[in-house]
Image 1 (tube, helix red, strand yellow):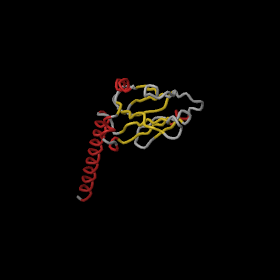
Image 2 (cartoon, one colour):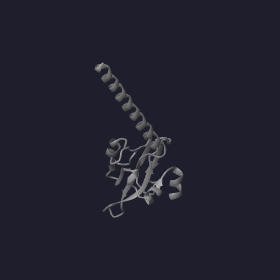
Image 3 (spheres, helix red, strand yellow):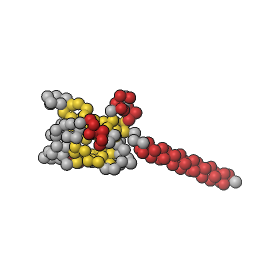
Image 4 (cartoon, rainbow, N blue to C red):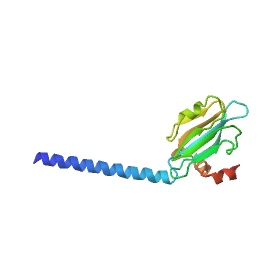
Length: 150
């Protein structure tokens, strides 16, 4: 009798754990579809070569079609392109000799970053919860917003 009760408790615990995992996965999917939990902050070197400034906050939307975006579209005249797809971003087709930044691959989690040193461009993933209301309003959500910005 004791063995059957223990087995029943184990099955109940496993069912509850699987149910919780399914709920968390569903909530994660909903968050990604409504814009995701993170944005990509693109920064570029300033004219004096001393520091950097924020060029754009880019929405990382899992449901959006893949987009190729140039720094020129963001208003900075350097030969750097990004690819945004499935809630991620990466450097592609950069105009520098070593192309090390392309080797960083996809960035998607808060705190991840990549830098193209020759072109003085960086991208960092920031948790959306860490943004102020003003920053949230400034997120570039689509290509039309870029055209209005430029």
